[in-house]
Length: 346
Ligand code: PHE
Image (cartoon, rainbow, N blue to C red; front, side, top):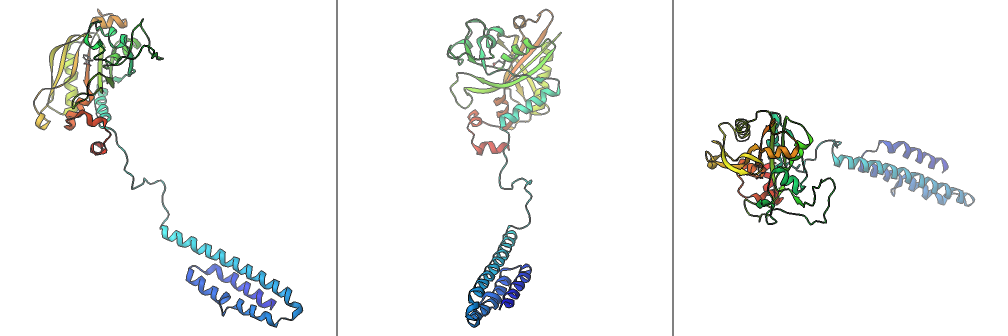
């Protein structure tokens, strides 16, 4: 009987590695442990074992059974792993992008800002930045804006409570803090930092006490431009703006400068644009912003000699340009985070 059991173990050991499928495994298992199996037959043989040998033989029989069960378990585990691998298909490449997840895209205002930046960078402008939280001096005084100017009224600009003292904002006397109402503050910051010649643009968020409607928002975006050099004239201003609108709106686009007033430029103009490429809006004047020649008083505030230096400045609404380019009729769409709107610009 001993030899019989040893032979069964050897047989199982040598047979299981070749078993690939569950059906083959079950069929083989039946030949050993099934009702007519070899191990079952050996167990039945116990009754013929002499009484005194029974305990030893019983023990051996149990050990053999355990050994064989362990071989079965390992084999089954291997077969199941193979079945799972087959269900999963060929090995995956974890570096591939996931096919089911839509990737995000830039907000239309970001796209428009970058388009505008690219146009100005091409002709030598660099991007300058300034804080959204400002002081009255940077927003008004340094820009030659008198005490009684309407923009300095609490009805027009968002002032902060006196207690809100903030780091990195230089205070001039007892002035108030405010959310900048235009990007012209960056003109001052750029000139205080560097000597002329200077050629910068400055895109960013600005704030007004406006009631929100289709064309107004309490915060929106502007792009400022400033060029300071010797002998800069209105011709240079007109030329850069003509160049800019042709870059954004295509060939045949031109600008018109309409006399106006800003405290920080003299002369000052409203900036209008006309293009043949805009469907319904083609060939009619559309306002883009303001511009003019830098006022000598502004140069005095930043320590530039107004006898020596001349310059132009302009400011345009980024929303305004995005709305014209894409035919958007309500400024509020930009801020609602509605994917049905945003996905049109993906
Ligand atoms: N800062 C002005 C505004 O917000 C625009 C402007 C900028 C005008 C530069 C002239 C020069 O209305």
